[in-house]
Amino acid sequence: GALALAFTLFDTSLLFITAHLAAHNHKVRDRINDYDKICKQLNMKSNISEVAQDKEVPNGSTAGIDNTEQFDHVIWFGDLNFRLDASRNKVDDMLLALSDQQEPQYHNMLKLDQLGQLMKSDEIFRGYQEMDINFPPTYKYDLNSERYDTSSKSRVPSWTDRIIFKSKDEEGLKINHYDHCNEIKISDHRPVYGLFSARLNGSRDRRTICSGTFNQNVYIEGNKRRRSNNQPGGRQQTYKSKPSDDEKWYATHTH
Image 1 (cartoon, rainbow, N blue to C red):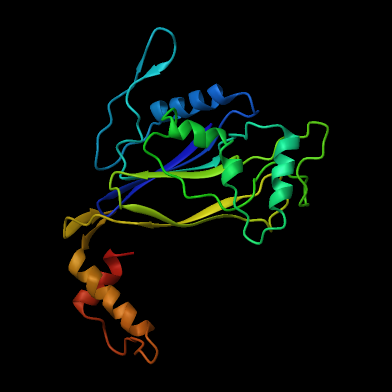
Image 2: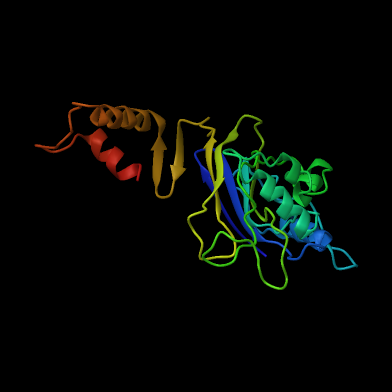
């Protein structure tokens, strides 16, 4: 399943999707089907674009466009559940060979990654990117430990937890850092996080925001004052008398 959040910031629409796709190593096709179903049944609209309605076809599948395409920036994250196509013994040997390296390189292991293979063949996440992975597999750990699964199931360590992104503007969305949180050990997964820079479109000087009107000139001036006040030795603005009409407008229309 999936949960999505969408909003428009200035004239830029953003969509965030967190998803949990089908589990188990062999259910690759089920994960692809989950992805396709989420894209087609996503019931969200950008304030900037209109979405065509999906139609049901006789065999029960969902036909229609990819409803994520209407957004300027899209970020998927969560337990996507893709595994390494290898035995547990082979992956353990590969991890052991990397254990003495100060900065392990996982290139050879990632050649076995189901998601990477599928993205290269455009079978899933067409048009999306992922930053290079420079952290160990995030699944499956024994709870509160550094050990991979020691249960009778002996699951293959894999990068199940991922952050995938795309933008209509090739340079509009960049990921600056991608890593896992090894300190959080209360789950059998290690959480991952990404730090992004996004380009925002601001083609109109004035636009409606909630019950007020955004004025670009006032916004720019407010940021200049804020930066000036934050400089070492900068003058902190205080009101000893009544604020001006412009200052009243800024305070009531930009929060």
